Length: 203
Image (cartoon, rainbow, N blue to C red; front, side, top):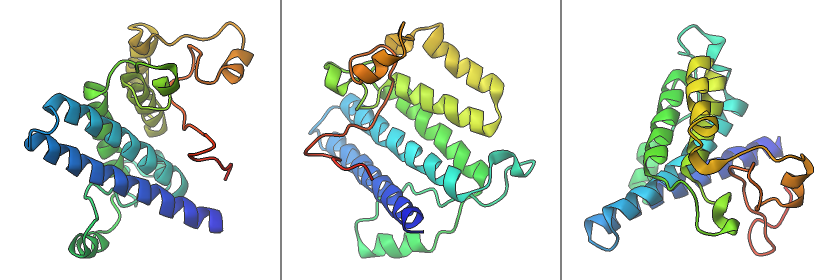
């Protein structure tokens, strides 16, 4: 269907942009333009988005993790190379699909890096949930471990948010609060921002 085609195209477009950013910030750090810590934070944000997109692709275009005992069935191509030249495109086209197990390992590798390098919070309320944070990486890791069937791992990650209070998230007293104040509540961890000048449509 058109929706499936556009989902595939737009998610891989986002993944490639993330890979281009990762290459760019590494080069900027090597060239002394930004600090290594700033480069790692930007890379963490890009790797968070890369993991988010790959997981969506796995949910829609691969069988569940437990479909085979070792998750050796076909997943999706996990892209970690920036495609911005003809030679890079030709090289990446030759690569096939990773197994689901390989994809989940790469998802968790990306999110572990993101967790280690992202800030606990953002300076402004507007960026608090529209830019990835340490808590967002933990929450996505939690979801991925649930899909994997690693319930002990999911409990461990959840405890970081609930017990260790990474990000200081908490349930609101009233469920309406999240919708009435979508970027100024204690409960929201990460959302895609919609604005009149950016991502303004509903499709």
